[in-house]
Length: 171
Image (cartoon, rainbow, N blue to C red; front, side, top):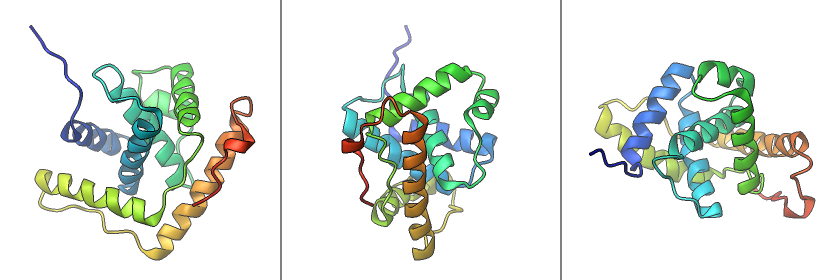
């Protein structure tokens, strides 16, 4: 009898590490991904379960990649790289995730740092070398700018969901 259980941080770390390597994403994306997952669970009150956690990790990672990378994959490319999900499913995951977090893509430098050090602690257990340095002030400022740009872009992509009074313009 197989017992399914909710993932722990180590399960999520291992899955995210494998996906990041396969998609050839920059390491900073993993930090933003974990931050977005935490925001989603806290904002929506939805716990990670055996049935939803991989979808949520993939969705948070796609959004983090779009925020961090100037030349990120589009959803169609993610669907080709991750054949577990169709393009329609990936679009729906993105839309629901964004709606649940109120389109708030902001990541403050202090939030990034807190998540970075948690990920670094997990990474140290996996490998003696953790290949990601703390974020510089310049990169943190650029991240905040990109978050705001993408927040606006995502709202424009799904205008029927966007409520201007719910917009979180603060970084």
